[in-house]
Length: 212
Image (cartoon, rainbow, N blue to C red; front, side):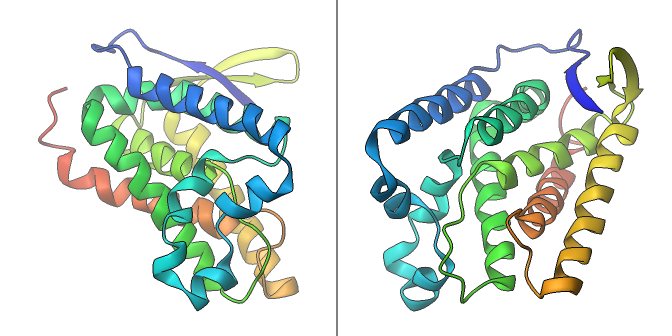
């Protein structure tokens, strides 16, 4: 099952921050294609480097959010940001949404770091930040209509079902990976879980304050 859209009839503002974030990820990816491995190593979050020198590597908590390992990694993340980001931005406002996105991404990376602090493998991708967007969407639009592609059929399902299914997969996969190897493997499941929970917690204080 793959989300391909949602109901935007009640969206009130143009989500330019969401679109700027998507554009920034695309630009960085194309630049990465022509810059080689050194570009990735310099901007990725490397847990062992951060452990040795947190202040000197703090900037990679942000720069790593705009790097992706391949086309599928990039396009999958941007699809989720395009579908769910605009609605969350509509409720939080442009500036608050940008801060929210960055905070979720940083939190997600730090949660992942807790489990793999000695790893020298570069961590990169917007998945943690986008997981935060999904958490906010679930809290703000639990009954919102999400259109899912299931084989060749498109069917609308409530957000609580679509996103609830997503986080269950992350929890089960993350627990299974930790139990079998002691790490989270090549997929940053702990970052997904951490970002999702951060999204819910950061949105919770504003849930009743934001005009519906």
